[in-house]
Image (cartoon, rainbow, N blue to C red; front, side):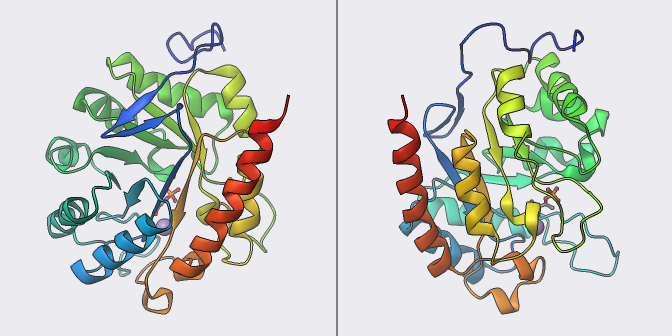
Length: 270
Ligand code: PEP
Ligand code: MN
């Protein structure tokens, strides 16, 4: 991987990515919230519920990359204003996906962190624009991308002078159909061995099934992840996107206490 100049691990140094008061790479960070911002009530009640259960950041999409053009596409600016209000009420920094280069600069005025989704991991213009935005980036791995391609995508952002990139393994396409994707836990220690950037996982998109998400969150912690991003909805049955993978606040809460137990075990290892 000789073209990885800025992302490559050279020594034991771990890059710390600050997002508001949050420090990826220095503390374990759980980002939680709905797949999509649907209304002020839904976003704020979910934000309060995840905060009360230990989440340190709020997620919520306002531009949704949907397979069908007729599916809910997101609230755009109205959604960003709702996210900003949720941040004001809870103090949680917000991360949201940006799909289009034309939106990067104005979305960056609202969001604390910009998400580059799996479908855009090799949208090189978008990577460059996010690199120039001055905002930290959450870079999802493309569903058909190798680890090397993912790290090369991170290199594009760093090459624009933005050192604040958090890598996110969100599952890759395999022959398996029972799960939505296959969460590639190999990628966690691999990316940590190859780069100095924090690495988190997204078990929600990684398996797409509520019943499997808690186990894969615990497994991510054991594999050395620096954090998690998890979809939670205050009323999952009514979710406008990804309802099959939306945890209730109650399931999220019981999972968070099990995560603390696994973290304590891992931290106690020699
Ligand atoms: C999301 O986070 O809601 C999303 C669309 O993620 P991905 O790009 O990983 O599919
Ligand atoms: Mn989603």
